[in-house]
Amino acid sequence: MKKKKKLDSPIINETQPHQINAPSFKGTGIKTQAPFVNDYGVVIGDSKYASDNSPLENWSEDTDPEIMAGDEWIHPTNDIGWNSAENRELLEAKKAPNPPFMHPEKDVGNETD
Image (tube, rainbow, N blue to C red):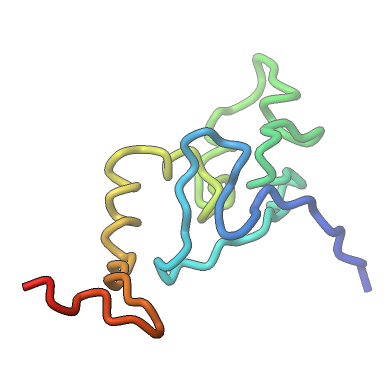
């Protein structure tokens, strides 16, 4: 049986702090996923964007760009597309609103009317 290689994950506390505008998946119901190795032996989602087996690292005149098409080249939660305004709005819409502040012992709203 082939032993699965443990991959370094850039995900900390349901976000990707290495990306300046990385979205947080906290409270959205979307589970952040670890990097994976696709059928071509290329690591997807580790945020290093270079893999020894990647066609990008071994490009030549004979490389057909179509080889890099398809879902196996896209990470579901660590993809640059999440940084777009449209996708960030989708995430924000999934988050539950914060409840109002309430003190556990004091009625902070008492006589404020």
